[in-house]
Image (cartoon, rainbow, N blue to C red):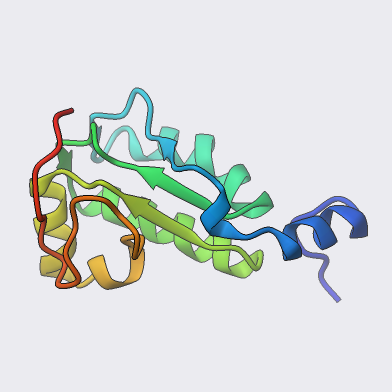
Length: 129
């Protein structure tokens, strides 16, 4: 049997009881673009985190995303799910929200409680970055 992401059974039990909605969104930090060339840095920073706990990544400052960036978000989602956790994003900029909606990832990745987002994957109001 392959062990889950946690180092110990106690850590796994703590993660299993963790409610993802109680964890505040984590800002994408220095990322204003998730594009080819910086997607590896995003993965290096957040992949270990999504393997340990549920993560909501606040993309308010991200103004541009390309196929490599989308692939990085999908990788984080898959890593989290494989570890038994959730990975969502919140507050995507209007342009990022549009890209996510076009490729159908808005329904998979955008947190249901995300501010500024309607149930149809379109922004309700823009947020300042």
